[in-house]
Image (cartoon, rainbow, N blue to C red; front, side, top):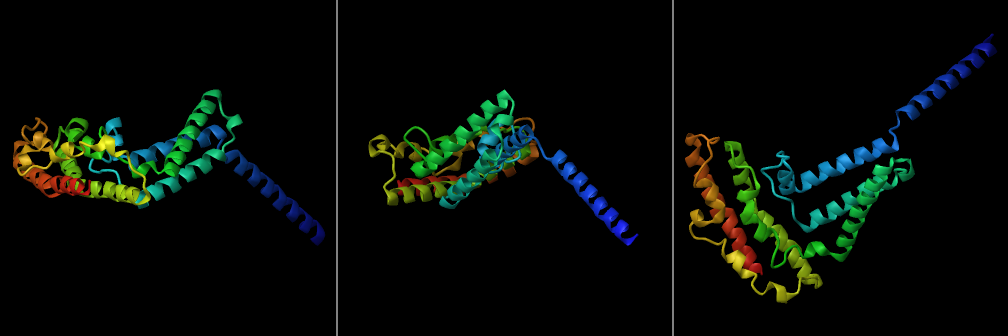
Length: 250
């Protein structure tokens, strides 16, 4: 009887283990589900890392933020890209639908391009004479929502963040100079003009002050003075010093 009970017990454990294994296997996501989750996670990551891009897509969770820019952030983002690549390579491409196979190839190409740009150290050359944070930032009023008090507070937060934003770009470019990785000087001969245009003695003369000259109906009149004071302060203490420091660096 003891032997029988022992055998029955072993058979019971084996049966439970088998059923458990089958349940685990049944619960494993398909290649398509894994790929969909990867794309979703990658998209969310891009929105967090590029808050200005997020705003442009209509996602307003990060409207008060600017991108984090530094050598450490470049290293971190490269490591994160490798994690996404590892997840992609773990997915069986042949098990995907035809459309997702195409999306797989595009996503893989984007990751590969990111790797090549990092290896080439393109991040050490973040500006040119036609584009860059210093040229794009004054266009902020055109590119962000400015309909409510909260919108204005987010806008002011970004103005306050400009000095650090500029410092991060200078850190990258300073390292580029050290490594001999820079854009040709011939295309930067008039670099000073867009910088000097933002260095004003009166904050109200800044292009970035324009939204405070006339408020939309969604901003109560009782908030106007407070927001104007905060806007002038942000321009005087963050934007103008940021441009002055960058001009001196250049």
